[in-house]
Length: 118
Image 1 (cartoon, rainbow, N blue to C red):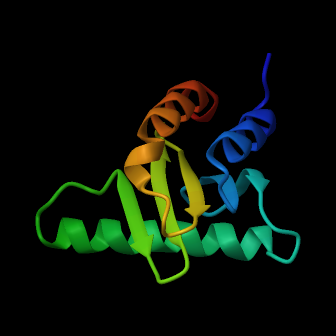
Image 2 (image 1 turned 60 degrees about the vertical axis):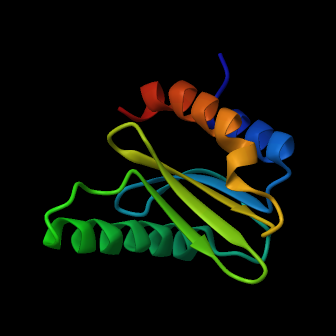
């Protein structure tokens, strides 16, 4: 049986992402492949806070909570995607890499990982 940590490592390799993590909605680290200089705890807590802010903004306007948050800067694209009821996939990639190119890999990862996070 493949562990979530192995799945994260494989996803990072397949997508050539800078960083990949699976975190809980409250910011706990489940599995991560981050650069050594990055604090896993700080990174995961801030990603959870970003999603929490998006949820609050959406629900204040009477919309459903987002299933995905996308942040784009000049030098990176951050994708935070729901995984099951309790988890989130965070992928950091170069800006020239289109999120649409990763849709199949993301969908497969989410489907496989969701059972471990529900």
